[in-house]
Amino acid sequence: MRTEPLFMVDAYRRQAAARVSGLSAEGGVILDQSLFYPTGGGQPGDSGRLIWDGGDMIVTTTVKVGEGAISVVPGEGAELPDVGTEVMQHLDWERRHAHMRVHTALHLLSVVVPLEVSGGAIAADKGRLDFNMPEAPEDKEALEQALQALIDRDLPVTEDWITDAELDANPALVKTMSVSPPRGGGWVRLVRIGQGDAQVDLQPCGGTHVARTGEIGRVRLGKIEKKGRQNRRVYLHLDG
Image (tube, rainbow, N blue to C red; front, side, top):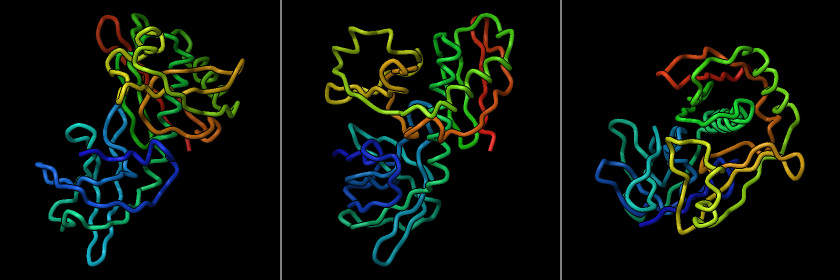
């Protein structure tokens, strides 16, 4: 049982029809195609609503189940649609779009802090990356200014696909040590920021992103925490 990931085709799509192809052992609803992004790579699962003839269900989050299947998780006590039911998916767009803005901003943060990334997390108003950084940066304000300058260049954010073998031959593409690149069917998705001589970043990623960096808006860097002898956690906040 597989779910077609509509969010990979168009991250800006807010509504889509689907058919219920199964129910998970945990009580979730498995769809044949999903507008909702499932939790993964530090990005939270999407929320929203399913509506069908005679019923509706709040979607609190979305998760992966089995090999290639995606399940939307209902709110407590919700009525579930039967297998085979045609439903309409309604995405909580404001929350998703915030995740997109934060996710792309974190990719740019890994550009202005060119160190190995050991972890990360995304929320609707902030995110963070953990770097292999024995010493805290001397000038956080300069980093923030460099990050904002990249955002303000309004660079295009696009994707490419390479084979698993090509990724294995180019290990430097993988910045995040704690998250395996999103593989599937022998292909890996790369997210590219900038084009040609103006390219600033290229790395494997299965998450959702804005189409241009200018869409991120203003950001600010928060606290930088020591997380072990070799690691620093850098927080990033959307500032409006």
